[in-house]
Image (cartoon, rainbow, N blue to C red; front, side, top):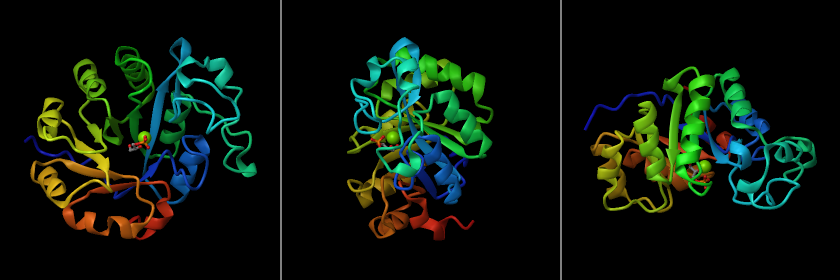
Length: 249
Ligand code: G3P
Ligand code: MG
């Protein structure tokens, strides 16, 4: 395998910003991750009506905003009116659903690295990937602080083909038997998977093949104690404060 480029200088990455500390996938959540000492954040990008790109996880607006309905059918002007913080706590009422551009600016102003997850269930790959790539091309400065992940391999293949982006990370719940072939096809940077389904043999095989190994979503350090032994490089967590001991250097 190609050599692993070591852009990931951290063991702890905030999930949806820092989803236990502030409303997920908002600018407040990104700031909370930074305040907790995280130097990288994972957020989800979702394609909506009129080609809008927002930072959002769910297929419907109901859980994380005061609106409702199908996320991909929402218009940017309507999403801009929604409250994305009050559901979490009063303290965050008035928090907005960020656009991708809002998030890119915020993350860079905080000097964080970005793991941008392209949501596989948001419309079709042919629409979301070029739109995300164009936004990154125009508004993201340092590709060594950028990783793109997705459960949808086709989305990552398109990133690879159209922009030569190289820090790509297939996401898996259960790691498929042909994972190595999949990672090779896009010269992947890392394999990102569910910590609770990962086996020691799988972890060791991923590391032996020369890839970074990231695991989501662990909020209790005890749950991933063994994973560090197996070679896990970083944990994706809703609460970076739980891993403060790993953030010191
Ligand atoms: O990138 C890791 C994790 O975010 C994948 O799952 O559903 O939280 O986006 P999900
Ligand atoms: Mg995600």
